[in-house]
Length: 591
Image (cartoon, rainbow, N blue to C red):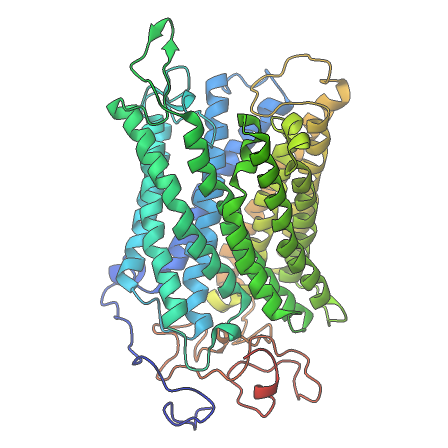
């Protein structure tokens, strides 16, 4: 490859844009703090997201202590409990998962996997992180505001979200939450435009769209979805902010509060629900699609097998992204919608399961007859598949109106949502960190600590959420501070609640081992070398590991083949990298 001049290689099209080295940092501050290098921005995003995610973890512990051992912890008041619910949900869904998948993995992997030197707009990329950080700080500030953070629930439904009976409603809690969301969306839009333009315009020579790793396809499609879905949440947040501060009535109907008629009138709370869930359901796949792509790459690398049905996988990702915009109202069956609309959204909900099932079948067939190595990334990938399938099956129940209505406000929904939107994507995040940690640091994570972390996390997650399905089926409601002694609160149900709480505390504690492993291995871990997993994709082929400024040294790589040439008959190794111009290049994989 090195002997082929960039403009004369007959197998590749000519370069469309000039190769430009991104700006160099000239000080410690511009290199590490106000960095324009996507790799450092990725670490900043991930570090901030993990930090706020730990806050969300502690909030979940406090909720479980109240549910498992009610009345014992006096500092967990009713107001505090509802504030914990709200902040935990919003932190985990938006500020942790979205930020890690798109801001973290997106920034680190997209330029490396497409063969670019950096994001197309490095300065805008840097701004996107600092606005995200500002959004997190505004969110955290609500904990210290008079009255504390909002307790309206993470969906922030009006009218209760801005009324005095709700914690933070008549004070600054809801204001800070809405301002933080507005800032988050502004910052994400800056980063998202970078991801899309980089994938479309900055791919190296030979890197066609159908040679992209599925990780890039997942992040790219999720970013396009987010750019279309987040504006709905943006306008909803701005309109509710106007209702709260200026007395408008976008979402507020005529109300009487404590015997006093308020100035509101004519607003529609249901309109907010539509705007919120038009963002909220695509948000599920904004998190899931990057996870789907990453899992596909982990399976291929650690099973030494090409991805089965690559083109089908790509179109399944795109199809899921498109269909996710016409299923949002299945979250609103209990809002009183017309039965015809219920039928439509139930039908589209079942249809979107088809491309999702295609991906599961293709993952299983990728593993079929593969040389499976049960490394830590593979264990987490397998844990994701099992968990996502289990959580998805309960979603088929909740997607049907007649089943969803009686289950809607029970712990069954909490169990389903956490299996699909909590445990499954976090399994992928952890597997991806174990996989790409050698690329980021040049060292391997400690295997003993890693196996301890995996098994406690995987088994513990099922110890939490499998019993919770049963608890919901017998009628235990969600979002209740204190349930009392109704007929369904039998001794076994109370025992299960306590068991779930102990399991949640145990799983949370296991994450501390993982964080210690990240720190310890960066100093004492085994030196990884340039390509420890023997992968084929470009991120492992940089001249120096970890990659330096500009990623590729003097010359950008040239790509001759797709990303999954594993275990080819007659090949000297069980993998062929994308930059290998060997004779099999034109005959293997999609062009």
